[in-house]
Amino acid sequence: MQKILNSVTFCCWGVDLARSVRVEERTYRRLSQASGRLQAMLGRPVSLDEAIWSLLRGTREEGRISDLSGSWDMSEVEAREVERVLREGWKRWKHPKSA
Image (cartoon, rainbow, N blue to C red; front, side, top):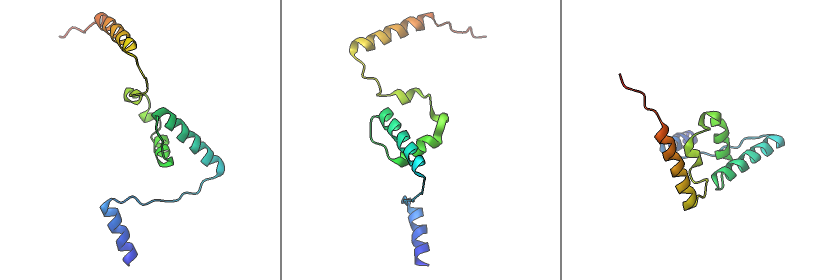
């Protein structure tokens, strides 16, 4: 009875409980590769747990502009060029007439 109460208490306090999952060697290799790609994309070490969550999120989370944050080391010259091109594009933008 004491073990059950401790488990419930841990869950209520929000303590993460580690779990072991058995996978085949080929599955582990693919998961490790996915983890390596995620690490390269984020520029920091990632856990296998984080890699699994990334895979589970799938395409729903892909394509966000915020994913690119910090991924481009831009010089001042490049920043000015991007700003110039954006301003030119904005000048050509046509606002729909309101009714």
